[in-house]
Image (cartoon, rainbow, N blue to C red; front, side, top):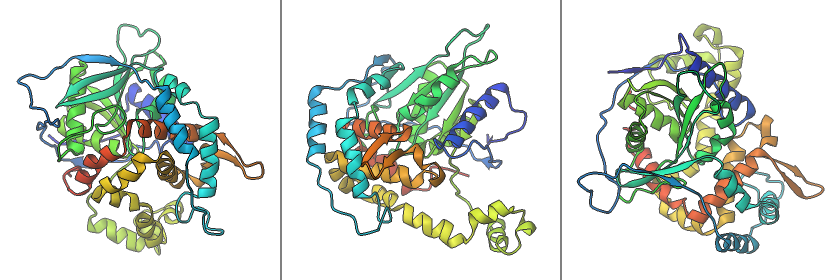
Length: 405
């Protein structure tokens, strides 16, 4: 049965979702709040898998266990010692961020991270919401599960799964949880934020072949285990592909799908002709002046910029073990790697979302996004979570089965 993504006749629950995620787009925490995909997507068989080295038991343990994030003084001392020993190469004169994240800028971030950032306090922030783990297909899958605040007359909250991408984690949704959980006009959501296997506190696959289809199937099993036969999905980056795969596998279970990344997997001749004519005759192909400004010159703004910004994807898809050796061992290297993505992918008009830098005083004042990045980097370094991303990215980037149309 095909899954059709449409926007007509929005229910109140869908409307609330759009309001929250549109706010995310406007604040710089996401891309846009628009829903704009109208094509029919083919269904995918559910299948099955096992991702542990251990032999698969006759029956899986379906219990759900509470989980709490913890840290130790030893881990914090090790992090601080490595920050103190950081060795940075000076940047080329007047090169700015042209060759990646500026080491002169990074030095100020390191100083803030070492002397002002409180990792123990951030652990307490992460534990603000209930965490759980359950074993699915041989992997202990971590997730945050939040129920609505306040009472709802005769009904429960609408189940909603939020799926992160890279670089990201379950905690990137923390700021919007109060909006989704709040009872507004007798409507609220029951939110599930899982960690993709290999990210955060979910086990990493121990066998080759794990891709977005496997992640989608695991999360469908998670929702079933939690007792949800119908639910809503939101995904960004890898999460958008996983969410789409979930809808393809069980279209009758997905009541609404919101994506803030739309992978283009089939470019037909009509699109190519429109792009060729659009720069000279925009009105002929339905392009507005805003469309023209965003699209052209096409090669420079799309092909060349894509090649410039996707070097990370190539090495992570082909030689992740090599990159992982250095990034797992150096918190500063990992921070530079992640900060470069956040700074490069953040709207230049909203750069203060990242941090405020007083060049004269040489100080860094944390903004929401800097705190999020340092939280993510500290967490990833302490639990050694860069190298294990290899399975999802290398498998998915080297096959054409993740989004079937």
